[in-house]
Image (tube, rainbow, N blue to C red; front, side):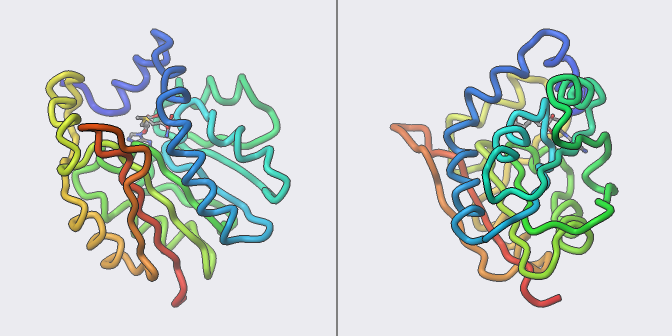
Amino acid sequence: MKTPIETFSNWVRNGKDDGMEKNHFESVSKMFDIIVNSKGKFSIIDAGCGNGWAVRYIGKHPNCKSSCGIDGSDLMIKKAKKLDSNNQYFLGDLLKWKPVNKVDAVISMEVLYYFENPINVLRNIFNNWLDKNGKFVMGIDFYYENPDCHDWQEKTGVSIMNLMKINEWEKLFIESGFSNVKKYQLCSSGSWKGTLVIEGTKINI
Ligand SMILES: C[S@@+](CC[C@H](N)C(=O)[O-])C[C@H]1O[C@@H](n2cnc3c(N)ncnc32)[C@H](O)[C@@H]1O
């Protein structure tokens, strides 16, 4: 078994990381719509940005003031920096990293189930990343109600993959302090139950 960071660094070595843009684009573009439609000008962080494709995509939006990405894989971050000198990329652990300036929005696609206790990442984002009225939008394909994903841990050999139910994720958002928590299943098709998207807003601090 390999840690998530070791696994995704290997994906950069064999070029498999490029497939994530193709596979995640449809859901991520709808996740960005949630942010764009609820904000004027906005600054944004992509938590677990991989090679940075989504940072570059949203960075081109006319209302985007700043777009940056953070990831724990140095190979992902090196690749992101090599491809793009307009936006910022940081190497760090989502459990501990803090931006210098708080932002209006945070997005994260296919990352938060790689933690034993995802609530600790949610709390870090809520307390240290988001400004007042900031919005967090999380997308995951690996969740209990999507049976097509149940063999992914066996197939990939990743040491931590937390298979949780939709209402358990929703509860974590509320426990972390988020308000107006809403959930969607986007891009479902046949037995594929779609990307579970949960959004929450930091209204009370
Ligand atoms: C499935 S990839 C998703 C990448 C990107 N969001 C995308 O959609 O293409 C998961 C990413 O989470 C990162 N990651 C996993 N655990 C992390 C941690 N503790 N801190 C920072 N990044 C982490 C991995 O390095 C990897 O790039």
